[in-house]
Length: 291
Image (cartoon, rainbow, N blue to C red):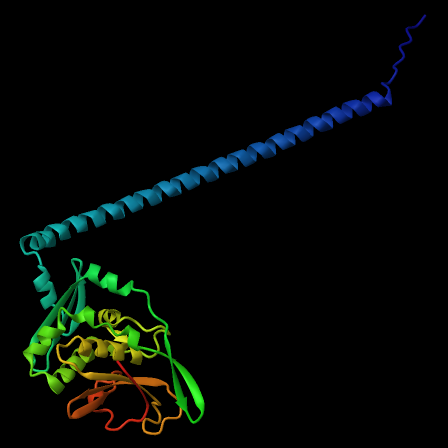
């Protein structure tokens, strides 16, 4: 009797299960390879960046050391000169070109030349300056009439502050012969230490502000000159004159202000926005407001 061996193939479901397990293993292996490759790539990039940063750091340290050496050399060369020969405030002032305004050591210093060429100097503590400019500003108006029309303009008279200049003007007045000459001297001071700037603000400045900043528009400079003249020990008759700058003898519309100065038998009209303002007008027609 022969041996009869019969092979029974595994069920199809078992084959499918084995195939699925093999596929999952292959997929997991592939994912692992990808992740490992990515990790190695990131590690390599990180190493590269670290090396690059280390190189840049070394370069910056080298530049810093070079600059430090240069600084030490310059300090050794010039610092010694500064220590041995310090520049005093007086020497610093001498290095400035007259006329000038400077602020140093809590003081404001004005230096200019009078009409005889003599050097003049005035010093004001910064605290005094601050107290003046912190004063609230007025807002009064005046009504100007012309041919039935009424023009409302700002009244500049409350801005005139002669007390701000009580420390310089009386002595400056005594140095000259007074009268008309001092009016020219005051105008000379304004011309040297300020420049005209067109319409720098709607609200006028206190005169000490204009002098310190060295600039102002027509009303600022006119207020400054009026304050200087009012600070003099001599009484001048002063008036702000609102004029038509295009028609100073036949005004149509007020758009400018100048100052009229009278004393005994003479009167002058001064245009503060020009260095030639002393001889700008011989005759004027406008709206006069006496100070």
